[in-house]
Structures are given as structure tokens and as C-alpha cells.
Amino acid sequence: MLQSLFSLTLARKKTILVLGLVFLAVMGYAQTPHPVYLIVNNATGDVTFEAYITARPDEILTETSLGCNWGVSIPNGIVVQCGSFPTQWVAGETLHTDAMDLSGETLSHELVLVTAGYQYVPNAFDFSGILYGDVDGNGEVQAHDASLTLQAACGLIILDEPQIMKADVDGNDEIQSYDASLILQYAVGLIEEFPVEGR
Ligand SMILES: [Ca+2]
Ligand SMILES: [Ca+2]
Image 1 (spheres, rainbow, N blue to C red):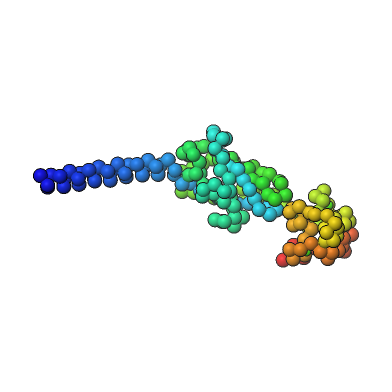
Image 2 (cartoon, rainbow, N blue to C red):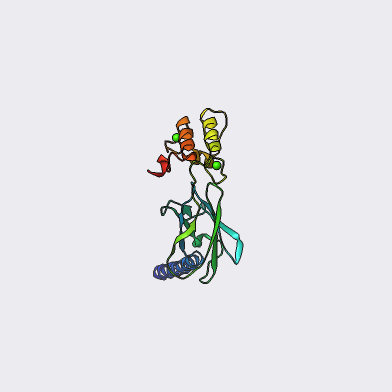
């Protein structure tokens, strides 16, 4: 009697083990990991992104989603972990990613998912980059940019983050009158490059 109980218990354990393995296998299938690495060039500051499979635009992953990030797993790279979509991805579906840099420039990229362990895309996004010295963002470096920088250095105006990046042309992480001086020199053609670009 005791022995039969014992064997029953063993059989049950085996059943539970098998069911557990089947469950894990199903769960594993439902969340098949598939990182997509999208390399970003010339971004102004940090990049944020929204990624979705075109068949399900309501299921969106961002840089804060599980397994996703910007510049952490890979330098200058967006990682979209397709296994984190609520719905299982399928090879042949299209992954759409919108990426935005600190300047507000937004670019899109699409690729077709394949059944490889991961996908790596060099030059997926190519931003126009920073035009150092162009504090007002009009596409040119002029005396007005130097004036804004000097006003910021004196505390008369407050620049936003993209403007600060463009105004700090010596790259010392501060906005000072020296930055304004360099911008003015650049505007009138006395210098052709800022110290921050030559680093
Ligand atoms: Ca300008
Ligand atoms: Ca500076």
C-alpha cells in the first residue's frame, strides 16, 4: 500500500514535471527573444524611440521597455527586443521604428523580421547632427548666435538643452563668454572649426 502510494506520488510528480515543461515551452514560444540592433549616426544627444510591428501599431515598445534601450547594449545603437511585444512576432512581419534625437529631428526605419537569433542594421538612422554654434537653430552660425550665447553666459536668458549643446563650442560643459567669442570668430570666418569638434 505504502509502495503504491509512493509510486503514485512519483507518477504525479512526473506528470507535473511534464506539464511544467510543456507550459515553459509554450511560454517560451510566446516570448521568443529577438533583439533588433539599429545603429544610429550623428544624433544630437540622446535618442528616444517608438517601435511597433506594422500589423499591430497599438503595441509599442520604447527605450524603457523590457530588453530595449538606447546606447546601453551597443554604442549608438537602439535595441528593440521583439520578444517584449505582447503578441508573438512572426518572421515576415515588418518592424517600424521612429527615432528622435535631442534636437527633435525624427527619422523612421522599417525592416522585415527573419527567424535569426537577432538582426543588426548598420546606418539604420542618420541624423543631420549638431551644427555647433547655431544656437538659434536657423541652419547658420551668425553673430546673433554669439549674442545669444553671451546673454546666456551672463544669465540674461536660459537656453534649452539642444541649444546648450550647440553653444558650448569649447566643450567644457559650461556656457561662457569664451564660447560666444569663438562663435563670433567662426561667424566672421576667423576660425573654421570649434574646439569641441576637434576633440
Ligand atoms: Ca544661427
Ligand atoms: Ca564652454
